[in-house]
Amino acid sequence: MTDYEGHCHCGGVRFRFRTPEPITKAMRCNCSICIRRGAAMSPDYVAVEILAHDTLATYQFGDHAMHHYFCRVCGIFPFSNIVAQPTRYRVNLGCVDGLDPLALPVDVIDGRAW
Image (cartoon, rainbow, N blue to C red; front, side, top):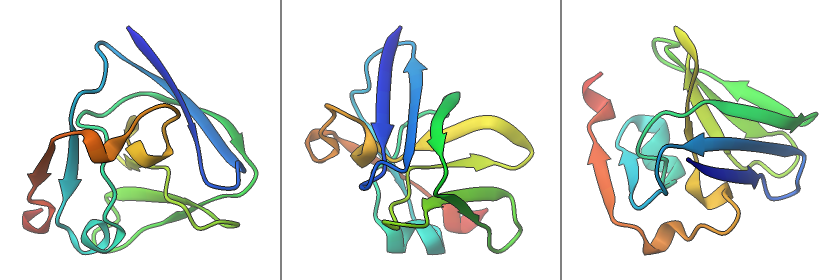
């Protein structure tokens, strides 16, 4: 298992998660919000432990199937989760300490088709 910690830009939102193996690739989605956000996300859904959340807010759109979380202070999007499966999160790899998402290969998923 590999442990990771991360945070938004201002530190108001902090979290940690664990993956079975080190993260070696990222994914991006082409839905209307993700294409504008441009974040490289965790390739798999993970269980996230939120350590600090005083500035955490959520945004939903369309069919309300996802919670898109962001920091109300700095505006950074650290993760999102599936409403029907609230323990499943995709993490913004740009928020993960010690991980360079720009150095990872990226797969694109067709979120527009959902």
